[in-house]
Image 1 (cartoon, one colour):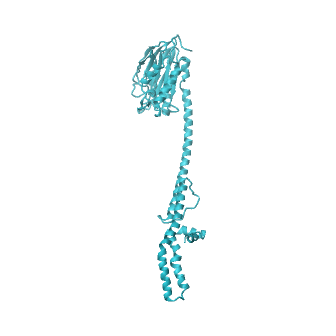
Image 2 (tube, one colour):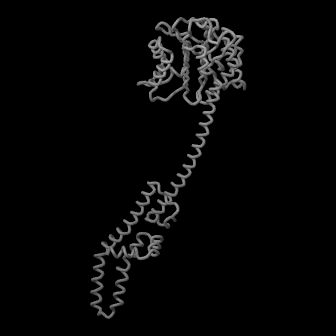
Image 3 (cartoon, one colour):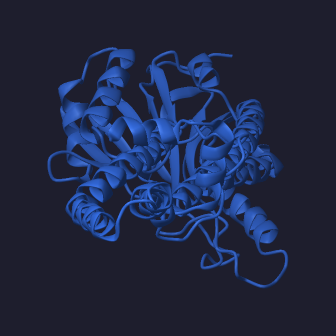
Length: 409
């Protein structure tokens, strides 16, 4: 019986295709059972009309009885043959979609009832088609995003070169103080920390600044800060770094609040040192919210800064900063740093690094070459940070003045 059903289903491509395109599962079962339930009895009656009535009734009764007995097995067998084949096709379609093989070039299955196999096959086909369309759009979007990312990265890399060229270089400090280092580590390609060094007729001004923000906004702030520093006539402020800070504040405040609206409240914190050409062991320090540390004889001395930033709307236009004269002895080290160093969270309790580990680092590395102290500081920072997210830019400047008359030309 099963072989007959299979042969009937494979009897012709056109017949099968038409049946699958236009008929549901119940109609197919009816067509399969029609020859056995209806056509055969009628053919028998017409073919054997010569039989007497009693014989004919007996044959028909036997046929009906046999039909009733065989009807359920026939329906079940035919149903399994058709249903299993349709289920296999649906499973195959689902597996192709799962593997990413969306056949959108072939014609969709014919329309069928929503709950019938042709209807399910059609829904699966259009599901694969919709996934294909969205995948194509997603790929196009990813291509555009990748192109935009490359353009942005290229622009930022170029901006980083411009920023480096515009700002002072750590090598400039080494030319004045051979025993020194600058650790300049920005969170992004560009950042908001700045190193400054400029010569005047009687000495040299140098220090570090921490501008508002990081990344591109911070980088623009460094350009504004550097422009303000360059506008100051340093010869008017020989030995007076506080005067330089006040002048820089007025320039930055004027530029940042030029619209008169007062919404912008950005600026820079800075520690600035002045070294006299005639005495490299005598310094004058002024700070805008950035203190100066001096490591000497196993101890760390902190020279406080004024609690006012540069360029901020809350800092008065006529703000005055204080100068602090500092004398250095053999082996003493001056240290300036931005708050990105102490504010970095990490460790087992995910807390800021703080000042205590820095003091321990200064005491434990006292007497070592500054290059080795720099490596130890970087290791301390990275170990504390661990897998935590980098929070801010970091700049650290350390100078060990040599007690002698004059600085390098």
